[in-house]
Image (cartoon, rainbow, N blue to C red):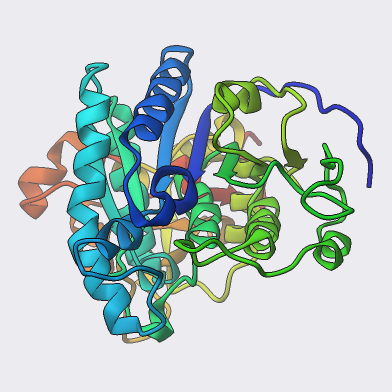
Length: 379
């Protein structure tokens, strides 16, 4: 554990989690706070960062209209408050971003969307498409329909999982806390957190009147993000310029380094995932492109597809990539078994005409593909 000032790192994608107490204190939406944060996010985008916002506040925004003075304990009341508050929250974000000529989109997730592979791939593709179009995704847990066993528990954890889903390099968690402190909230902030497990003994599970989490859940989020290859900064959301300073690598709040790069962590996870649901056989040209140039797998290079059992494989499933009987790589397929067989050997431009739809040009995108072996492709 150290208090050294961290150096700046290059950042491509950033997930910013904003707590209820920052934008909806005491259950009332603070439009001035949203405008300030929107201006900071717009400035970060102008500086080259792609931003995904995980916004708490839906339930808090619904408390007043529902006649509630504090966060309800009953799940059905939280769901009802979220149903009332969610459109108010998203409307506030959308209106604020509009001042900067930026379009905001609502993305609602549940635990099932992240744990189910097909839904995970679809959610990731949606976020990728939104960011590619210059849109800012506003993510929240789908509180109005989530059952207790499906709930992520709090938006701190959701933000870490979203950061991994979006391929973010950095997660910035903004709350009323200045960061992680050894000697209580009034003590000095630990600038860089090396041992998350040790830090758990310093904090309590206290929460705000309108929030679900506390510093404990922020440490949980940092641990998840670290395992996914995402760096985390926990900082005060009321302090102006915090987003830009965190992205620039300044010594603000508490920073938790990633265990590996996001891409490396994701590819390692794919490589060690459970048994694949099938395999595709590819020609030597495609194998060489994957093994030596880090290319995606296009349908043109596929010779055939084989299921692991009678169930076959679906979009989002893990499959092996083989060349001349040797497993070269492993990845998450964008197309199901029957569709892969239909487009095998064809050009990407023909996919829509053959299938009647097209998800993307690649059967397996390089971000979802990890090379396990290079069996002499250039021999």
